Length: 351
Image 1 (cartoon, rainbow, N blue to C red):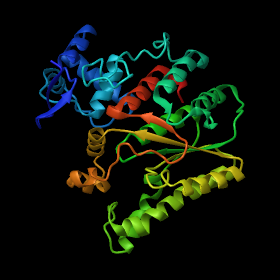
Image 2: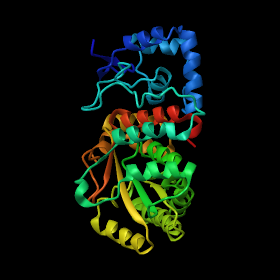
Image 3: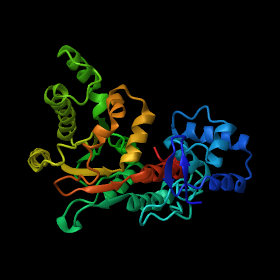
Image 4: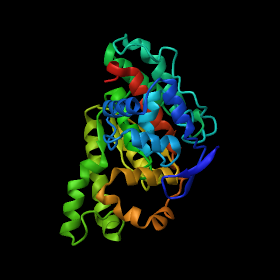
């Protein structure tokens, strides 16, 4: 069986083989009760929300194909069984993805091992996760090496690079926030996330203008509020740049990264401060974005879910920045799952 019905809605999931979850559980010698408890514990350690009530009945439904696991359940399964989603029969592997999630032969090294022992795990994960979307001969700084150097610096001291403004962009639900946080935890660079940074401003401004505080799609928002949000975000980032502080910025950047003039102005201002600008785009598929948006339950997303077909018509999954950039392929949650595994491997040396 390579395809079956999912989540009670009659949808078909390519490559879903529920029997593999049961086989993996039995290979670990776990009963349904034991697996449910371990799954909850794994999710709690990883900070995954929404599966606190996972019980044997839930796992039985997953293993029998009566319900397709949600995104946080899938991530927890991957961490519990130390496997990829294709390994567990949750989906078909993407081209070139493979299935085995062995990052390094020392995956199971105790958490208190010397930090240097984990460098290969980080290096291999970043090589698999981030790929240049343009010719490397363009002379762009290598983000992967910068992340490695920053992580090493936190334990050994010294940074050979100029500060950087790392712009992590992508559509809502693409996984950009999880990936931005992953890079922040590795590097120690501060995170500026547009949503929590500007939400109070946006909500009060929309209310003052007679609009809905959760509006993120009307002309009122696009013309009068969105520009103010990005002004706040970039103002904060440039304040860090003036202090020589590398910073990770997380926002859709759908209009900004695709505007060569906007990117050129930002690069010129940053360069004058001795700071590099690195755009990173998170690629994702429509179904995964819809699933992630639905699972987070944010009021500002209600309009997307209520009129998904109309919203989806505005998405261009082939959209890319108009300037040299790096690319993270998070279709079907591929990159986020890999980041979860690296966090598990690094354990106490991660932060």
